[in-house]
Image (cartoon, rainbow, N blue to C red; front, side, top):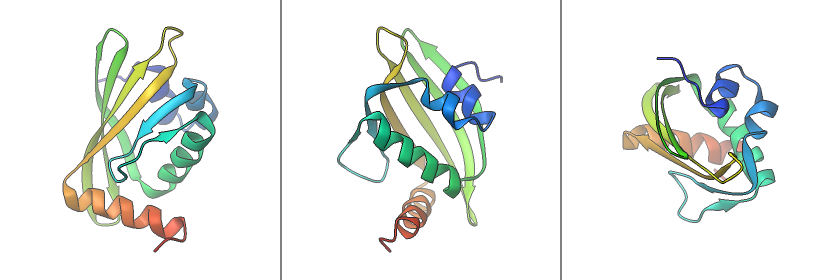
Length: 124
């Protein structure tokens, strides 16, 4: 399966600037590990930069699109934990991502992501 959404293409090309160019300034990002959503492009930029240092062997393996919503299915590792997840990208009228929701399974994989991110943020 070839990923076609510009965000997914940029992520797979390790082009962070191109990925961020697909994100709206007023984006709302919903993390699988934190209840309160994050808001704003600058905040999401920092989160995505950090996540890129946490995931190992990250790859998108499938994509579904319905109107302005794209779902990208991914697989990755964090340490010895294999995980799967989805990025739900909802676009505004300009084609920019205004709502970005991430879900990760299994719980042990999500816990590994959360622990590693907290350690990198100096919270652990």
